[in-house]
Image (cartoon, rainbow, N blue to C red; front, side, top):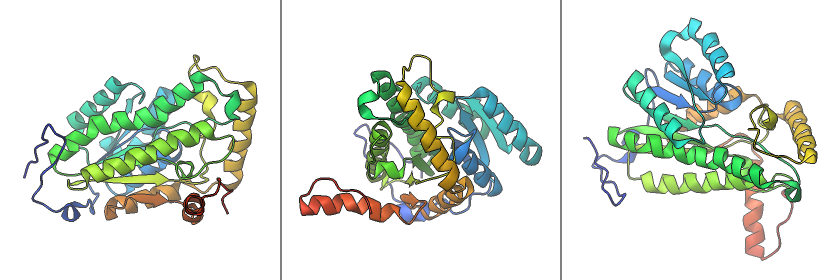
Length: 294
């Protein structure tokens, strides 16, 4: 059946959601933002391995062209690129239009584009906060608004929002990042509840330490974002930590593919995530101030 979307935001389906899991990914279509590097690129490669058609999107046109050029000799036109700044809602809508025009459908959307600012909160600037939330939170919201209604109307789809373990707990010197990723977790949980009766699934990826350039924000930070010099030093220390202790992005991508197939909401990369997140609720139950994670 072709579902209708009432003006009140409710959805009415005769087909149980559990019967509409996307178990066979072959010849399906995925769109991945922040796809030219890191977890985004690993998800692209995993989806292509599954036989999917993938539209790569990134704000860095040079990096995007390089990755599409690297992939196409092996997969042909199953991989294509669209330059897109997720902070611009019109650009994200245009990304959705392009994906549907090229492939006639989008089955999986990965709202992956993100930045990892760090530093003492009292040394942050208003511009840093604005930029962080425009990319990490509004970028996800723009993806949901541009893609989800079409997926609902088409009768199938799955949305993966990339949050972080920092969306479930907090650390000093990661206040902006943690606040933005808490927002992504909240957005994703609410979206899951609203779409639970529809054939569109939602997953929330909360990676811990992964070997990516998430903290190398200077490469993508706009000129209008002023930064305290001490925060750039903190970024460098965190980047070294990921290089030393981060797991491979391919392992993260495998978990995402499994979650899409299983229609699973929570996607974790490390066993430590659940006990770390549980500490907050133990504090709440005990009526105590926030304590350090185990």
